[in-house]
Structures are given as structure tokens and as C-alpha cells.
Image (cartoon, rainbow, N blue to C red; front, side, top):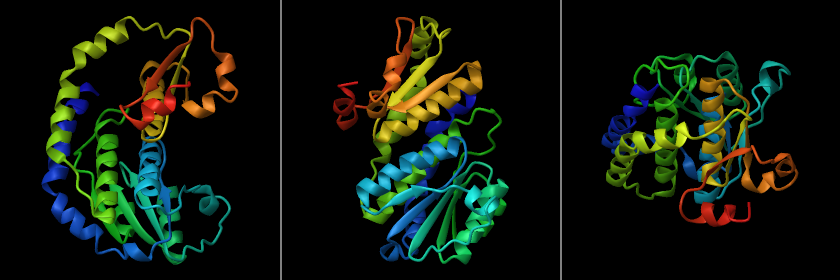
Length: 263
């Protein structure tokens, strides 16, 4: 898992090197015709989709929702997706419920854009446009590098849509610095008593990473973890707080930090 985390800066560099070609592909979609977006994912990719939801709603300004695949796979509903873009995110591109939903969406009139780590996956082949995550084989059960790649490709999609720029040089530089910071992270972890469970909190763009942090801790330490929007946490769940509680705030500088100050 740590070895794959160390690969993230080089994966970001690959995505940066291909950014112009990827942007040209994205802009071939009828972007101006879409008035809504549905995001299709499971597990770790679902958390990346939550980040993409914030990007689309803040940068493009159209409604964006998370799909419920069982609507198709369990309830056999027919979708009516006129002027809708469905974006499917999946490391493997093999999940039957995602494939079935994507196919039903296309029948219902949607355009489907897929992000996977397998160029030949069924989900990739069922999409109108497929973007490769550039992550290579991921061996760790707790996905890390593919999640990070999904975040950056999500940013690239929305930047292509909004015709804005990404500072890839700074992004790769900062990701290298984060990977090298393992000693400081280890020092915190070694003194962090998690025996009573953990709560992770985020807001805005950090909300997705709060969910993903909780999932990673559960997958690796096998302990209960709760994740909340910091705003929602004040509406009830905070009453469970006690002197042995351990809370992790994900609060990037700027709006997210000020938005979490009250919590």
C-alpha cells in the first residue's frame, strides 16, 4: 500500500503529460447540451465521485447527483436521461451493477463517460468516451493510487468543460512533498489512540476525502470509523463525543477551514 502511494506523483505526471490530448477528447462531447450529470460508482470510487460532484456544481453550475445502481439492477427501472451526462468511475471497470446502469442510461438517452484503470474493461467499452487512470496494476486491497488518479482526472474533466487551467507543475511538486512527509505522519499516528474508534470530518471538497479516510482506516485497521460533513456533525452526532473520542478534521486552507471553524 505504501509503495503504491509512493507512485502517485509519477501517475499525476503521466496524466499531466497527456492532459492536452485528454482535454481534446473531453471537449468532443456535447458539453453545452447537458443540463444535469449523474455520477456512477461504488466504494472508493464513490468517494471520488463525491469530489467530482462538488467540482461540477461549483464550476459548471448544473445539478449533479449520485446514481443508485439498484434502481436498474434490482428494480429494473427504465431511465429517461435526456440532456444528461453519466460519468462512471471504477478502478476495475468490472462491476456488473455499474455496467448495467451505464447501458440503461445510454438506452435512456444519456452520454456515458467512464474513468477506469483498465482500457479493455466492460465498463470502458460500454462508454461513449473512456479515460484511462494511468495508475497501472493496483495490488493493495485498500486502493490509493487509483483514487488519487480519479480525483485528478475529475479535475481535468471539469477544467476542460469550464475552459480553465490546472497548475500541473505545482500539483506534482506538492504530491512529491506529501509522499516524502511519511516521517511526520508516522509520528502523529504513533501517538494516536484509536481504541475507542475514530470520526473523520470534512466539508466541501474535503468531504470526499473525509469519507475516503474513514474507509481506508476501516480497511486496514479493522476498527469502526464514522465520517460526516462537519456541518451535519453539529446536528446530532456530536452528542456522542466524549473524552476518549478521536476526531480527524480534513480542512484544506481557505473556504473549507473557515467553513469548519464552528465545528
